[in-house]
Amino acid sequence: MPEAILEVQNVTLKFGGLTALDDVSFTINEGEILGLIGPNGAGKTTCFNAVTGVYRPTSGGISFQGRSIVGLKKHKITQQGIARTFQNIRLFPTMTALENVLVGADAQHSTGMLSALFRLPKHRREEREGHDRAMEVLRFMGIHRKADELAANLSYGDQRRLEIARAMATNPKLICLDEPAAGFNPAEKVELMNLIRRVRDQGFTVLLIEHDMKLVMGVTDRIVVLEFGRKIAEGSPADIRDNPAVIAAYLGVDEEDAS
Amino acid sequence: MKNKLTGLPKPVKILLWVLLALFAYAVPLLEPPIISTPGVDFGGVLFTVSIYCLVALGLNIVVGYAGLLDLGYVGFYAIGAYTVAILTSFHASWPLLLAIPVGVVAAMVSGVLLGAPTLRVRGDYLAIVTLGFGEIIRLVAVNTEWLGDTRGIKNIAKPPGVGGEEGWFQIPHLFWGDGTVLLDTEDKTKFLFFGVLDQIPYYWMGLTAVILVLIADILIKNSRVGRAWEATREDEDAAELMGVPTFKFKLLAFATGAFVGGLAGGLYASRQGFINPQSFLLLFSILYLAAVVVGGQGNRWGVLVGAALVAYLPQRFREFDDFRVLVFGLALVVLATVRPQGLLPPRRTVRAKKLEHELEELEEGTGEEENAHA
Image (cartoon, rainbow over all chains, first blue to last red):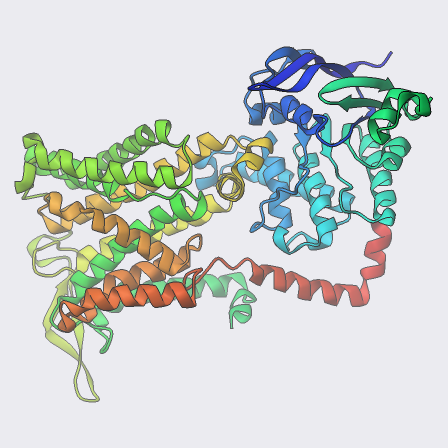
């Protein structure tokens, strides 16, 4: 039995009268790729936001590696090992690609004002390590040649890759990808699928939000399906494909037709 | 031109920088025509320029790097100046070299005290809060007898000189006649005697502070701290989610800016010998911000140019009298239209271009290998 790295237990999240997440529970096991799918507005990104500390659950618990992370500051959660990308790209546009990734690598560093001012050994060591780490991640994502280009000048695909690189640089255990294939053409999607597998092979656990059913089915080990803030199914890709509730949620057909 | 300069070997670059610094130190002695200010003491104008440069560097950290719009920067300047004034003249008679560090720390502490509750608000709201802060500091000074109220504080200590009244040695100025340049033996500057008439030693002091702050700026900017500031400016939420404790770094930017502001205020008070609340009007906060924006916020060389222009031009064109403020306003409007990013916006693109060029060269020869390796 693989070990659970993240446990989401009965999380409910309300915005005023609107219930965005309703008693959602699932676990992510170490080293797997878990897909989180559902129609628009099902609460996938909200679920991400609850895990990464952007929203605090109204009730329920979230624990990471056995420790509760509810109420922790966002940067603390990142430092503990959860990194994410954004559905609508949020890079630091006027910084270079390398600097973007360095900001991620800095999550594990502690150089302060004085160390930087006097170029103490700590600054030099962390700067060197961070730089090596950043270049390694950029190379892994295949954009090391663009290290010194401004993030804003990168192509759309490279910006998406840079987001993943920046998240990987924080040295996370769990990496959450929010629709990484949005706007990609089929060929790029295949490439991305392979890439996500390689990310996992490097020892990261992956939580993947994705619209594209084909991509999700091809790459994930398990899938959790949300609809209107509720979990309606969980299981292997094959199970999910044949699950009538999921088909109904996606295609909106009558239950009798679906079965 | 720029590419040629960046391509030079390191010792040559250092030599060029040293020469530039030496030239900056020598400017008031050379009294170059056109640049020199008729009717106003050139050394005094240069001192003002150096103080503006210092202030602009400090404000650039807050506004340019961390992206926090601060409209009350003169408040920190005032705190530095008043601390020095109180400690050296009004309530004690400390030596200046002891009072300035205390003034700087006082400004820093006030930066933290102001920042801790207010840095939770963003953008325009922060601007309004800081605007209030600057005015509060001034009004407290106006209404507190302990701070000399409207009458101000006089007899603020001068910096200690070297070699007494006559200075260590004396340096003659240049005199520019009609087509000839002469050493003017009548007009000499006593090396490091801080008197009342000759302002040049104060300028040297200000310039030294500018150079030190500039070096510190370069070291800090090019580190985790500088990156965290920029990331926070670009996208605060994303920065936080990438593990940047944004609040801590914003507070640090505020404190660092206040440090430099307090230092500038202390030096100013010492040169002036006299301060009152009129020296710390809201107008100055706006002028400082103008210096940063005109030069190109986020680029330290840009803000230095901006500060030099904002401080120097009104003095150079004194003969236009009241019109100079109008002209200054017009110049700002023209600049905002023609170069909205400032005279010298940050130019990372230079580095990007250079890399592109290098890669092209690489691709012709070893590009294949590189691919196979990846």
